[in-house]
Image (tube, rainbow over all chains, first blue to last red; front, side, top):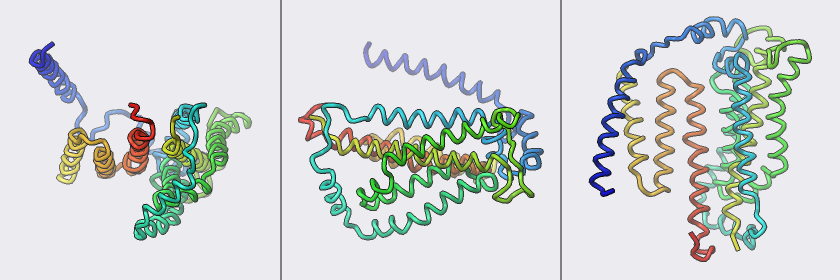
Length: 251
Length: 85
């Protein structure tokens, strides 16, 4: 097929796609007009029913908690998959002296401003991450977002040139344990509801005295916490597997 | 649609185009990160801070890091590999 023929085919296909796309857009509800009933119901009764001022978190971790459990295991499976695919193969070996390379790296990024900025950001990032994890039921955010922020706090240490410190504060065993415990925690909270004679992942804990406080909303806060641990560990597993890949050389 | 929304939508369109038209992968990652940031702002403007926070952390931070590390692995070790693909 010549380039010209290919162009003709492309243009015909594009015209067809554009026509269908425009027709489809014309059939959408107007911008900002939500047609379903479910969202409006959740909006109006969600806060009162769950004592969680962030209805999105209440939906995620309680009202449709089972879907979120599946989504969380997507991330779990992804991190596990990365670990399996990027395992050290028989012919591969670590670069002769990763320590030496790390030391060289530190020297290369001697830019003091970068290092100071990174190191000064680590503490605040950890605080923000835990705050978002633990206030998911009150404020925007929750376990997922906070977990990623916690993982970036550890990455800042690497960015600041402290590769060895990065390895020391996120050892593989600890990451694996935290990832597994977080994922299992979510599933087990659901089983706990079964144990007291309720439905799986039903919100069986006391909802607390008033809305908008940290110790409100029953299992929502608890699930947000375990999801935070799981997500932070999964992200760090993925990134440190990739980091270690850059240290591997093939024979 | 408010003027602010129109501006953010336009920025998102421009950002997406910039990502596609950038040819060099390492620069493309930076563009992708900026585009992720614009999308986070867009979600925030349409009053969805939870999704905006997710987009900000994943699209603007984690995804570029993962792609960057992969690029480094793909291109960085090549001389030591003895010229392999």
